[in-house]
Length: 216
Image 1 (cartoon, helix red, strand yellow):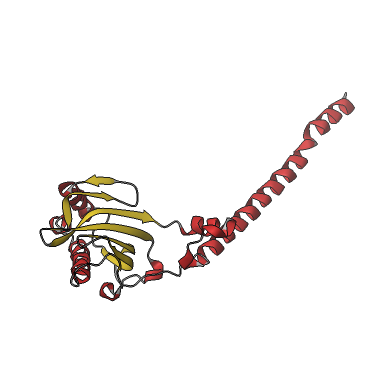
Image 2: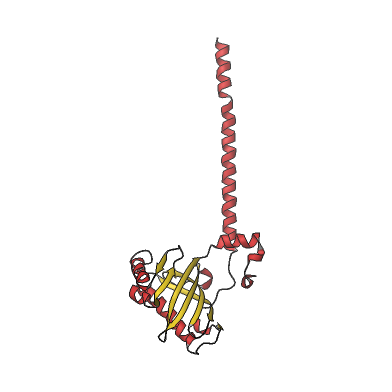
């Protein structure tokens, strides 16, 4: 009886050390994979710098496209200064005033505003909440005119507190469609896209032909 009991207990407990070993191996493997993945992510992040940074000096940009009045570049740059100034003051009414009455505005999270009043009221809440106390940074990538009264401005941008961000640290890419109404330039449409630098780097590594000409 004693021998049978001992044999039964041994058989029941024998797999336990093996299970513990397997658990430790799996845990070690998971940790190793986690460290490798973390290291890979950091490497991708560090090597995802862009070359086409644009310029923070808007009036030095050479516009392309159809001819426009000589003062149009200065007026567009002044409008962008109005935009960033209103944001920095947290002035929703002044911010909305740089858009057309029927303007559209798509934020980097996909929020869609339609009309000047909607844009102003949405930003009134933002200035009192998420972006309170922030300022805007902008680095112009290009300005294209499509006749005397229409222009498209592309830029890199971001919000910041304290010292301004340098162009290489700006995390969003933006498109402004501008029109001149009653002798004044206004923003008719704005689209803001968050740059996913690691995903962008992966796509360039996987298929180099997806890299823009300015980034080769």
